[in-house]
Length: 189
Image (cartoon, rainbow, N blue to C red; front, side, top):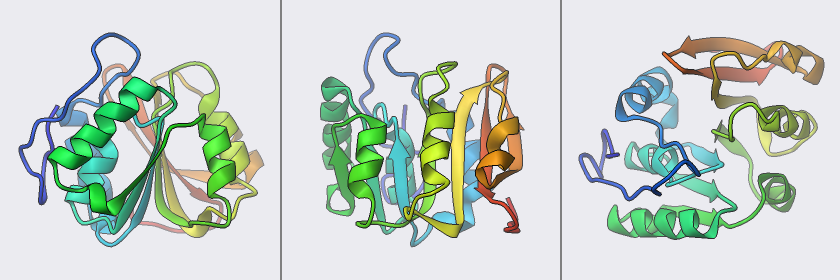
């Protein structure tokens, strides 16, 4: 896995062996950042279920002002910290080795995010738990973009009940990115 563009372009990132994390492939990451590209520069970015940190590092490399990485696996967090140091982006990053729900609670009142990316383990309903929390949270602006990476068959029809709307869905071979904002907000995604 490598950084696609920006200040750390072409640098290879360490990833965990095994199935504990599923690093987003370079091709899918490039597609994702082609979609959100203009909104990344100067943003405050939250990378939930960070794995090796590839998405948040890509955001920092492309000019995000700040990124917070949340990962509960200590070994994966060591890789994130190593990758941040290797890419020389650690000064723009904060890391939290914690359960995502606990981390969201801890961040409440401390930060507000322009973009929230989550890549939870598939088919466990974790994206719904996060969206349920964010629906009443001060971590999001009215126009915060929330992006969930999920298996192709993950159902997001419930988001309207939580006050959100799906503004775009990009489907790949085995998974998808779902772009979500608060209901009533227009965006170019």
